[in-house]
Length: 119
Length: 109
Image (tube, rainbow over all chains, first blue to last red; front, side):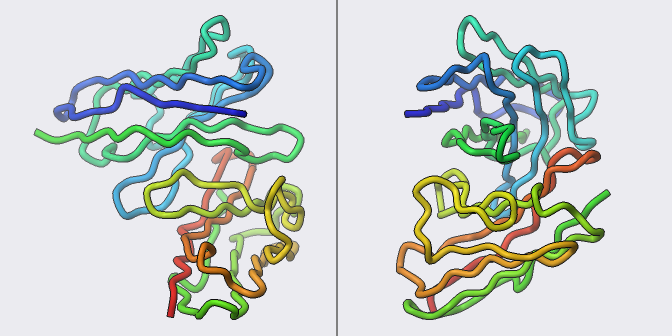
């Protein structure tokens, strides 16, 4: 069974930093591209970052470019999101999601971790 | 930049009825790159449809997708109580790489 478990969320002040982790199991993590997406309270889904299996290609949404950094450690079956210069509008549940290249979809999602940016 | 607009924002129906949800793209897109997801309160999204019309593994056949070009539809025939949720369409493109519609809230009437 594919399992994605996010951690690292919490309360942080504006301008602060936070590092999210996503622990993957039940599949060959090193064979899949991965993503981070988020959902502000009461709002819709927003994709924010993508990384290929070998970390050779990375994309960011404009809303986080220059502030967030995605990375992965295939030896540890883990995905990361380093978030710097956080703003109130970054408050959201952050999900990691596996990218299925054949179907071109996010086929498995974690349960999410809440990040609250507030003073 | 492709924008996905979903309608209606909220759809109120009763169990057993047929639901028709729309997703309109701001420009023509390949149906291969259009997917639908279901999200229930407090849960992660769940993949329903890929390639505009193919059901994901384990998805009941009352869920069907159709469309091409700029207009896509998710149809749920014979609503079950567990189908009441928010539905999102999603496009895989170039820039931005991945786009979601704003969602349709399917609620019990």
